[in-house]
Amino acid sequence: MTVGDIVNGSSNDNVNLTFIPAVGVGICLTSISNNGALVRMSDGAITGAIGTAFYTNASLISCKIMITNTRYLTFATSGNGTTYSGIQIT
Image 1 (cartoon, one colour):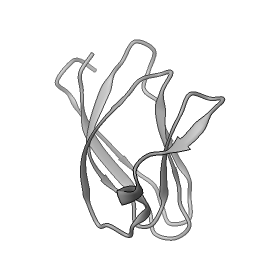
Image 2: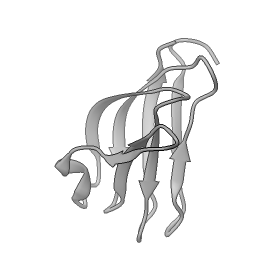
Image 3: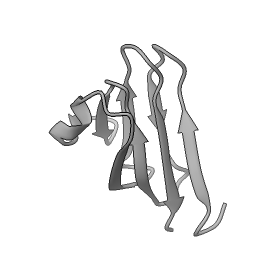
Image 4: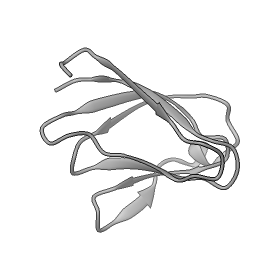
């Protein structure tokens, strides 16, 4: 992959999703469909929820979330699947 490439992913119902880019890769997530899942950032040791808007059953959330191999995204699903989309920036 190279800078400018579009990235996306999804999970099935009731399946947790963790998105960790490769070492040296940075991603700017631009949309998330959380369907009631807890959206969290993690560094492998500490995990914290991001924003109260991510706790709602939103069908699509526009955002700018920067993630790397050391600060990545997790979804704790409890129902419908989740999706994300973004662009590689480094």
